[in-house]
Image (cartoon, rainbow, N blue to C red; front, side, top):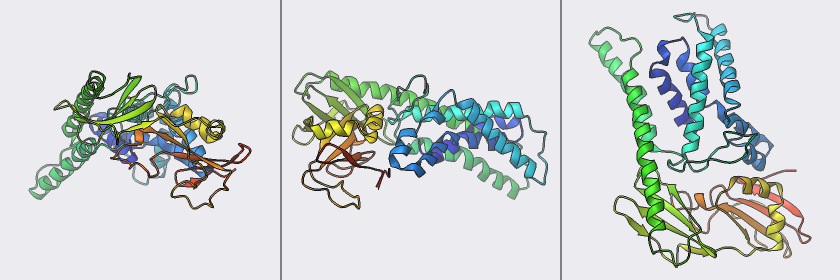
Length: 353
């Protein structure tokens, strides 16, 4: 999920009752809920390095206790720098336990969307994803914001009428928001399976089905972007699970698997290629010939060069991109006349040597 949702989740978890058990619980859990995304600093080493390490070791069960410990250390430093003492003596072990819970909430949220994560890395490098929630889910975001803002607004109203200040206000709102998220997960999980089964049991695909994936749309849990693989082509469809409708067009939604060329084979052995194919579950690797990557400010290659595009069909649907444009999370590799790797591009920039 995007960072703000992680912060809000940590704050809501604390407000659900943990903040009654130890001082600084809200601060520790809010920070810990986003701490695994410290891997963004790999971006200073280039886009391929950032892609390789994104949702890597910091998003694992083995790292979670250490990230929680670092978070508590940050809170301890804040505690030491404060001029005003806390209302109660900090309970550092409890804070570490709470920070660990918040860190694990980050892993759960990231698991629910279709990018996935590697929770057992480095012992098991496999990517896992639930594919039920969009990378930004407005319903979850709204529930968390309301759970934190409404108690504050009601507190202002109470002070206006001179009511006694309520300590630890907002617990029930926070619990309600968390229950709503769990219920939304349950609904989306059921509709995800429904979308896959609808396509598998329909006659809209004119060839034997190898596999099917349903990708989430934001807000509407009854709307899914479905990808189907057959032996020779891929086909996409929009599925409405409430009405059991499947929208697909063989002219617009079918594209044949790209031809394997020496350039694509060379690109797969590049740094970008290996990282991309390790992560991608629906990869398409295509030799685009002597064309520069779209949107990149680079000189076009010579006539004997090849530009190889890497894209993942999970992110090649209308809510994120349009066919013919630079697909979200796509990568590009320049392959020279002797099949040497001359350049790698991703995220709008080139990976420097």
